[in-house]
Length: 214
Image 1 (cartoon, helix red, strand yellow):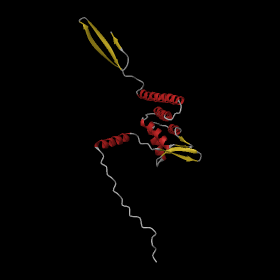
Image 2: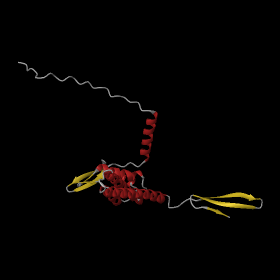
Image 3: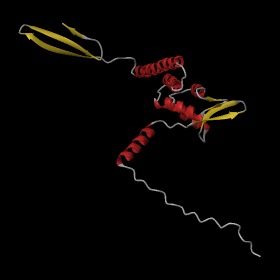
Image 4: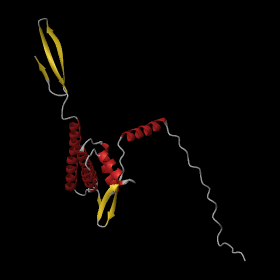
C-alpha cells in the first residue's frame, strides 16, 4: 500500500537570473587605476595567526612558506629574515585578542608598512611606528566619543592631540629621510632700476630665508 505524504511537496525553486550591472566609464577607469597601482607594488602575502599550544605564531599565508617569507622581506625593504620576523612579531603585538593575534588588525598594520613602500629597514621601522600611532589614535578617538566626565574628555582629547601630532612628525621624518635631509634652494637675481645711476639687486632664496639686498 503506497504511503500518503503528510504534507505537500515544496514548490520547485526557480533560480532567478543575477542582475547585471554595466560599470560606468569612471568606474572602469578607477578599477584599472587601482589594479595598475597594485601591480606596481611588490607582491606580499597576508599574515595568519595560529595557536600552537600556548604560543600564537604569525606566518605568511602562502603555499610555499620560504617564498612567502622572501616576499614579505621584499615588501618590507629588508635583507635579513631576523629583522622581518621581529617587525612582524611587533606588529602582532599591536592587536592582541586574548592569547591570539587579531588577524584583521595585524594585516592592516602590515598594509600600512607596505603602503609606504619601505626601501630599507629604517623606513620599515618608521612605518611600523606610524601604524602603531595610528591605531592608538583611533582607539583614543573612540574613547573620546564615550567619555562620562569632563576630566575624561580632557584626558582623551590631550592624548589624541599628542598622537596625531606625533603622526605628522613621523610623516615629515620619512619625507626628510627619503630626501636625504637636504633642502633645495633656488637663488635668482632681480635687478630693479631705481634711478639712472643706482640699482638695487635683490637676492631671492626660494624655499627658505628672506631677501638680501646689496
